Image (cartoon, rainbow over all chains, first blue to last red; front, side, top):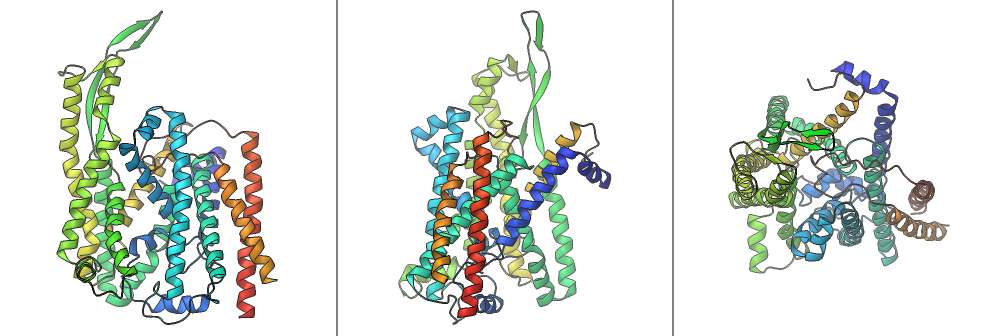
Length: 431
Length: 78
């Protein structure tokens, strides 16, 4: 294992890539600590330390590595990009023009990416305005009546909004640079960095408040859950495919037998992100109408704000299952796979090509996705259960979303490093 | 002094946003963000793209210097 690391650094090509990623990540973390101009740093720190956990911005703050509540220049983090990607993914299903673009292949995809980038910046302006507005009224860090800004003028606010938007643009560029010149997918590595960055602090918070025994058992449970997540992430069903042998000119092609891998969790962690983003909407709405006494505000704040009410959990769980199926349906198109197989003379042994193959694939897929969806739902309920059991806060260190992100991204990146190593005949990490 | 930095910050922010948008977007959205296939476009970057990188880094440094400078100035004056 360690030898593989040494080998990875001995390969000049790979070393350059790894160092590049580390360099970008370092700048990214540095920027996440620099406060935006106009922020009263001392006051913000004081407030930040005094807030009780379980603030409404749990997930968003997790994705920004704690940068959001400290109003830094990278406060928005990767969240606008994620939201923009989600929105465009959904729009592709709805708007025919985008669907046509997607079918076009590489150039169409590039166009969709470009739209995502524009939308990211638009969203960044929106979110930055929202956050700065909250900071001005003092609702960002409740229970703290110090001024978060030096001067309460619209110029300062506008300056902060522009700076944060530029910060988001830089983050987007960093992500693309890592994808292009580094290793792994840039955006997910940046998310990974932010999730891991908050990790020691929140673990330590558990130790501080609950004592060493709970701390130890939390770590133990976390490791077990991690192993289980790795196990399920790797699990896949291999549907055998036999390719017919054919002659093109004087060469023989095909005749090989391969398989179509269907992963148990084909959707990755996207359903979890979708579901939690959606469940934050009502909380957000309440936040802006805090003073009103109307019925719906009361109803939402009793059931949906704290996140430990059974109704909330059930809604979360059901949403995750729904989105898992939804995302798999978007991502894996049995008809397309079946058509491609037919085109190149492949078939699944015992099943006719064409329509029956398509039906068989979707049958297997929907059955294998069911445990996958349940697994995603259960894993993401862990922090909510922990919230009740050990009285931990919402950013519980081994929270479902953070574990899924960490394991998912780490596995992906290690696999990519490994494939690079194997090009040079070195032994990889995974045996 | 503060005004100067503020104006410079606004200008460099605008330029940065523009420059980043001029780059060709790589990596397509969510699907290959979390456990998608390998989609490394082995195109290699063109000369224009490399020059764009250099300009972006330059403006980025100016931007960062402005942010830090403004932060320090505000801390001492207020």
